Length: 112
Image (cartoon, rainbow, N blue to C red; front, side):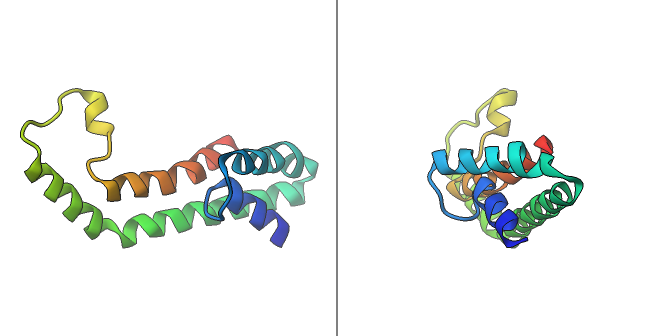
């Protein structure tokens, strides 16, 4: 229950932990807890889904702030970047923070 939630939260980056601790939590979740039995696997999926929903809520709640920051940065820049890779880069610190917040829960969910 709570131990799985905690391990998944650390692996997803929501609970504080250094990168090596996050990596170890991810390995614990994927290699030990998830394959143990179907009940454990279901709990891991439930916890990972919850982390994904929390990250999604964070982005939704901060949408206006991100949009305003991106617009402000667009006005400051003289020449827009070209190319596909440039279009995928965050346009502001706020957008970078939102992407960082979403990346680990998405990777964890994809790995399941």
